Length: 312
Image (cartoon, rainbow, N blue to C red):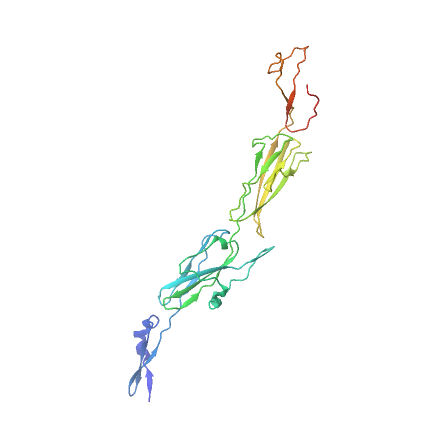
């Protein structure tokens, strides 16, 4: 008995339907003695999906949002499911020691390597708690007929932003020139870091002093790492710098300087107690040959030490 498939006769009629219709179709078989059918199912092609590169930088301590480009060759509806995982648990002196992103295709059947799937959504946001270091994002696309395809995982390395240093005078005032031999208190407490949660280290340096000066920075009392004090010993210009750095293995830094003008030495002024002598008025007036007695209660000077020569 001879038979043949009537495939050429069916091509124009069924060609546009074979890739779209799910179900059973019949290929006519021409037999010498009788007709018959060959039953089969059409192939459902899986969707395509690719995670898009973010259009804005991924920053440490900030949410990161991802999108994907997807399509289906059979024009089926497509659903996206997402997930992410921090993959760099170890830090070294040169930065993060990262394993490569696990293969989503291989791990699809072994989901213990991944957190639970997210609910279906077109976009995906990684929370700030997981953007303090490199992480992987993956996506799976599934069509309405059950075909699934994973995207190539996206490796994200958040950008570490540099801190901003701030240095200012908080005592004995903010107006220059500052008094000689007094204590100038500097503060860097307004320095900040744009990355949430980053702690800062402070490095203070005296860059230049007047010729002959031996003054140096010292801790204030009470003091912290954000403050330093300076006692100028010669009139002139003092320059101090503050460098702040975050505590990442590859730290980001910022440096600011401040110039302090110190006034020349001035003569001391005596503060006296009021006299009980009616002949003594507020401004000291005395006769040439008559002494006036008064008590010294203090000396107003710019900070240098002076000898006490008497009380009258």
